[in-house]
Amino acid sequence: MTDTETEDGFQAVLGAMPKIADAVNAFTSEEVQKRAFETLVAALGIAGSSAAVIKPVVTEQEQTGSGADTDAEVSSNGNRRPPARKRPAKKAYTVPKDLNFSPAGKTSLEEFVAEKKPSNNDERNLVACHYLSEVMGITDIDPAKVLAVYSAAEWTAPAIPDSALRGTASRTGWIDTTNQKAITVPWKGQNQISKMPAEKKAKA
Image (tube, rainbow, N blue to C red; front, side, top):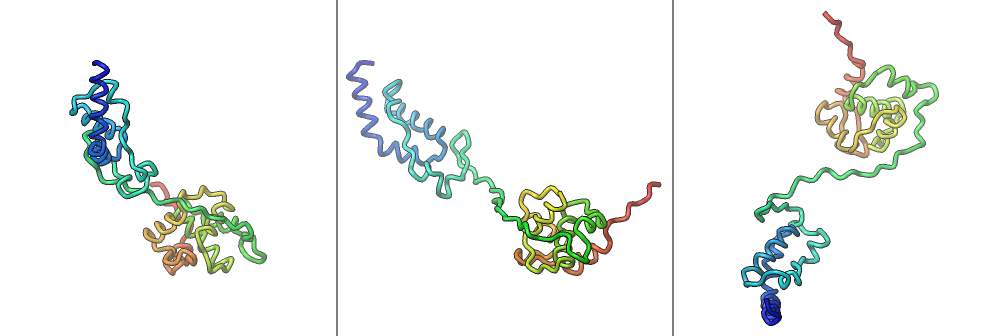
């Protein structure tokens, strides 16, 4: 290709840039934008190095990742797919360090856990909430205080504590998380506590 042809091709691309930019920015995937740009430039009869001097235009919104459309995935053929469901965001909790889990004249947390032997997170959440409310007399039970019990009992804490507590409430009804700043243990939970630990069935 001669220098004159290269210059003419370059000028042709510059003249068509506004329309090319509109078409390219219809996509959010950088890879799809690149292919769309190359296709449009090729349609102008320009190829090779002259087409590579201009990069696809990406809007500021796309660069920052803001806006609803940025969550949409783009398939290999350029079609948009619905945005993937986002996982619940993890909250940072400040676990209180001033809770006394060996209150004078009362059962210690260590003793209570050894007595009830919770075997899963639903039972652990129940034991934690029951101990905080019934033994320690705390009324403003929240996920942070439940995490303090987990830490003191050396249990592995759930990744998303507030979601785990709501799950226990939904599955079992042992705790009430309607107010996550004042979780309570209703009669169903109190009844379950009285039955723990579950008796193991003798093998036949």
